[in-house]
Length: 513
Image 1: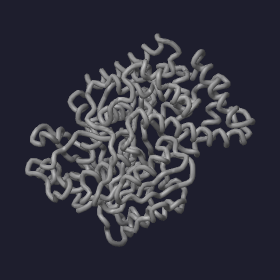
Image 2 (image 1 turned 45 degrees about the vertical axis):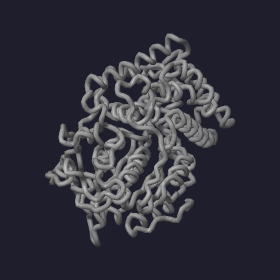
Image 3 (image 1 turned 90 degrees about the vertical axis):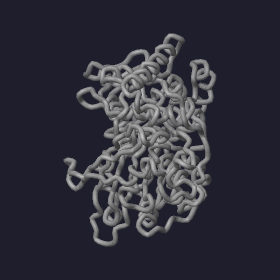
């Protein structure tokens, strides 16, 4: 059961949270002018926040060659900066040179809930273009509640196993009750295990943490590359601190002006677009498990396959069978990257032949389930941030049933599951602090917004909308498949972004690759 709106990305195919992962987010706790360092004309932090901005990081080796790590403190509650603190994990790889150092480049892989530190050490700090790494210190901060930064915890490994197997397309009232009970147990587990941090993991608070990081790193302005949900985090930073906004790249953009219901429905349509692209390719392949006729026929076959698994799960060689929910998650995971399509064809073929192990492995990767049965905190943090940032899309089963037809219209394959997934925040123990709103960030330097035309998780129209909202937005379009565009094989996209990061020259608004 993912929680559908997990807008995550790495250099790998990853995905969305509702039990699917419900995850586009907007808003956060309001901040008064007197409290907000850098907001609208303020150039210095308040006296209460000054110790955080003036702290010195104690860098140390962290077991990964060429990277060093530190712990940064921030207020747990920005309304009470003299109260409790929260410890945030920071990592960096220093600029390799030669040439002039341009400062720090913060990166965030999305989620919400994705580990920025893990992304930096496994990919960005070694895989970003050499000229970028030569001139920037590559830096990551795990957002509050995520990974190494006082992570939100909700369920044990065995509990999470059961949670991911709950039927997300209930056929009757009893199954709907079971699904709601699963959401309630998840939320109760989060409150029980992480009640102190749960009210303080909003995107606004994470953006304010980034400004502390900017200051302690010694940078006058924040330079940043954010992917997927990381685009909302970056846009929120620009909204709060336009005068401190440097070179921002927002890749796989979200639309902060949309309420949760519309975000979930748009994402539903995005995955349908991605599936059609996959199906069009699949029917041309000799090993396509969805037939050779047409996209429409492939769609029917996949729906029939899910229905069979709903009635009769197949074995996996483990104590978990492959049912409809886990199979759907495995398919969704492959929609993030067209490079995963051959793997999906093989996994679907195996499942149709009675071996669910390959498709289960894809679902486990999506959920970040380890071989020992434990889970990373991605799904827990994802729900915690999403449910705090926006009012719930739905609060009752009846509301989901009423909306289901519009979701099924958006995606005959995934629509029902996405609609029910959007119910997860309806049982959240902490009231939302954010609301949908357009972000203008007046006074910010040019901000590059990147959209991929057939992106499943962040539909292209979101990039168009965000670029239009931002007073200095520049839209860069990639006509292609998959989630996000930078570093995914387009020389046109990469050259435009590298030029911006290294020379400060943003691409012309409307540039298309």
